[in-house]
View 1 (spheres, protein in one colour):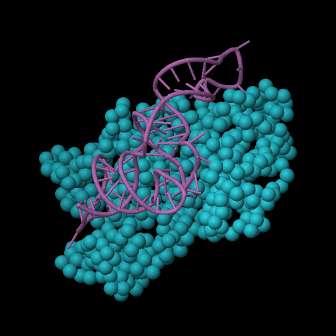
View 2 (cartoon, rainbow, N blue to C red):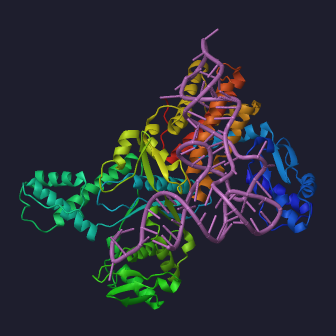
Amino acid sequence: MLEFFLPVIQRALFSAGVTTDKPIRLEQPSDKKFGDFSTNIALLAAKACKRNPRELAQEIIPYLTFPPDTVAKIEVAGAGFINFYLTPLFIMQSVEQVLLQGDEYGKGNIGQGKTALVEYVSANPTGPLTIGRGRGGVLGDSLANLFETQGYEVTREYYFNDAGRQMQILGESVRLRYLECCGQKTEFPATHYQGEYIREIAEKLYSDYETTLEKNTDLDLFKKSAEEIIFKSIRTTLDRLSIRHDSFFNEHTLYTPDSQGISANQRVIDELRKKEFISEYDGAVWFLTTRLGQEKDKVLIKSSGEPSYRLPDIAYHITKFERDYNMIVNVFGADHIDEYPDVLEALKILGYETDRIKIAINQFVTTTVDGQTLKMSTRKGNADLLDDLIDDVGADATRLFFIMRGKDSHLNFDIELAKKQSKENPVFYLQYAHARICSLLRMAQQETGFNPSARTAECRLLRQLSSPAEVQLGFALLDYPAMITTSLRLLEPQKMVEYLHDLAELFHRFYQECPILKAEPDICKARLYLSLATRQVLRNGFRILGVSAPESM
RNA sequence: GUGCCCGUAGCUCAAUGGAUAGAGCAUCAGCCUUCUAAGCUGAGGGUUACUGGUUCGAGUCCAGUCGGGCGCACCA
């Protein structure tokens, strides 16, 4: 719609002799009585012109000329807003585009010819996925979907580490449990992985090898088996939520020397040293973040000689630039909040365009059952497994609940609500609207032989519709493309969830107020096309959110 | 102590610096001989935690206070 209004407004400002450096913005007033669209340009321009905003708006209006039968009314209101009222004809005529474009409706081209890397989940294979990870996974996946709608060529990446101390402890944990299987008494340290899954891995080893590994103090086999089984479980869990990755990036590759015998990690040190941001003291190699005004320097190589996580993280991000992505999106939980500023600083020092990097941080998840809040705890490994949650409430509810709140808000996951099969549960409310339309269309086919083919000239019949419920629904359908770009700009799929909820509500109202199959034939068809267009937008939106679109419920 | 996030209706949450701060749930009152009542309509409910500031205009931006969450390792 912006492309419809913008040129006209610009021309009008020019003709009226109004100059302003403020960008023209078109907004949708919260209340319909203020029109379908509104601009505050007169308010913004008034200051520079030293004029009264209302008077200025009055002077601009005569120059606002639109094609016939598009804008019904233009008026000045409030402090100096210019409000536009569209004709029902123009709205319903525009709805035809939804039908004509089908699955493509809502797509844009701002990412055409560009590449995007979206990194999410990135859990190390030390245990099953937790609920907290799930939120980031769904957020990342939905964001990747959003980027794809705009023409970006998207790579979904998972960054992981199967080396280092955590994996060592994992291997040792499995070995100890294995020895227990063999009938030995062991001391299981509190620092080791307590989860039941460790026992299961150990039992599997025991059934494969019996007691032949008892004397095996080398952890390699234990580690390898654990990694394999755990990774498989992680991927199975992600798969249940339709979260898939194109690329798995192993942190360890950053440690291995290239053809010139230098590792990616080493290169970071060398380059930072050239910029005089490296120093060695206390037996460690430090990134001199105090030079950037921070309180402490940060360790890049520990006195043991191993890199700390920060170093490979910087090296990893450099590969993202070297792989030449136009857009780099990192999704992670609030517990990593302190990690990225150092990485960004290092990249900036090394001359990379950090503007390309976008960070999406999601706050934590708490689950409530019977009004009781359970704080997630990794230690116990029972109540907070993502798999258990999916078993409990299903994949659709899991996905939608994770993104129906802003990512900056702490998410309160109400398990009881997610299981409810009624309007209170937003998942069912949304899906019911879709199923209802499907049912309607099935019946229409049976009774009237209606065969929806979007390309027929028949969808011109839409132009007959003009009742408020119909026009409001039609208008909402036109909003869909803007919702995609808004969600993307804010990195907030939540906006899409809210939009779809509103859309479902408008449909239910239309359905309630306007008889469809019982209307006279032309009106009946028109209303069926409006329903069809609604179903199309619901489907397209569900696809972005990764929620299924049931044909019947 | 310090960095980041949050504080909005009884509850869960919205509100690109704009008009009378909105939804859903819960509560109350209505709507099925009619295409799915898994739905719809209406009502009540607010000093936007507090105090200042910035401006035509602040829930939104700035400073401070109070409250909650997450970090603050030579762990990732």
